[in-house]
Length: 75
Image (cartoon, rainbow, N blue to C red; front, side):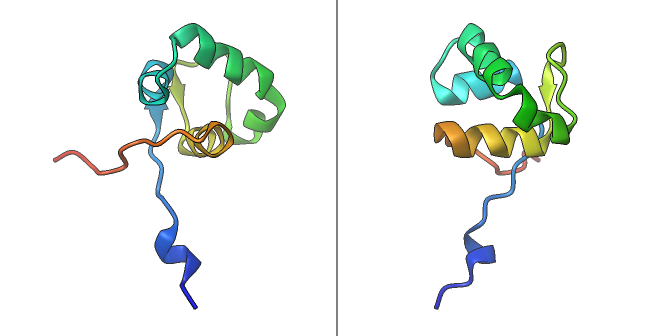
């Protein structure tokens, strides 16, 4: 049996424009997705005027909209 924790992706905080670019959508679409999921993003400290999304908010949006992001840390 596979260890599910080994397959879990670690997310980092991202700007809305970065996540939009990773998703292949416009910033307007990303803002709409955030607005449509406002209640689900609140526990992650989301506020509509924030440009930076918390790691939890990024994870939620990536899982909901099947967005693949590069989680490698830059050195």
